[in-house]
Length: 196
Image (cartoon, rainbow, N blue to C red; front, side):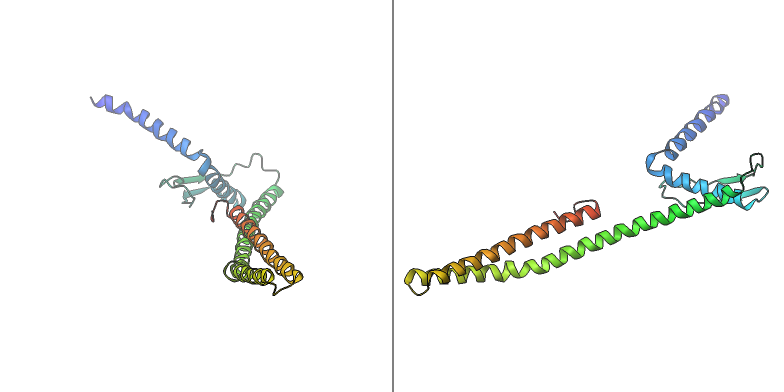
């Protein structure tokens, strides 16, 4: 009976190893863990410590506790260590890529801020048309039309009132289109539909 339990341990360890391998290679977490492991190894390689033993705990976005925790043993092998300039070049590439990622992040924030301000300014222009100008232009046109039908206004005055009414309507439609365009730009900058 004791031997049967002992024979299960290799299967359990293989299953745990397979699960950790699957989790580590999953698309969502692979890049973060891979970057952290590379930076740890590069740090040990660049410092030239001989040898390094000890625990090193690294924070990543992995959600399973202990996904990237353990004891790392670094032992620099100087077999193929002819390109000392590659260390600096690699570190410069890593720093450059981190800065490019930060610039891209800032560009996203700037795009969202710009799109939000465009929506706010368009709403500020659209409200007076919706609340006041359309009703006022309709009232003026109806008054001039009533006067024209009763003989109190000339044809020129009636046509001018009609033209101003249509001008206000066209401005309202153009501002509505600009508002919808600004909403689409905001949704595109955020990456999802924020305002339906």
